[in-house]
Length: 101
Image (tube, one colour):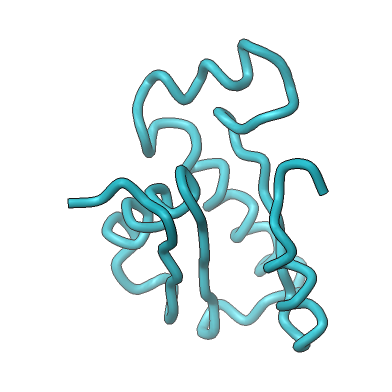
């Protein structure tokens, strides 16, 4: 898995639904896709993640009362930002290797 760690595999093995996202600004889809991160954290990436969570809840794959989120590096910064914007959506959050203050 060139762009994601094995956290997702470990979570799935433990019985959790895991969704490794490649939101706008991520790697592997060309310069324009990656450059969208230049607009700042939370502009495109947080809505991309939120839309994916909305979809898995709508499909009945996830319980909206038992959602967690995790990220490392830029993903960790995104998690730290995202949980401050949604307040009560996620019951647990893991922030790793993030640029925070």
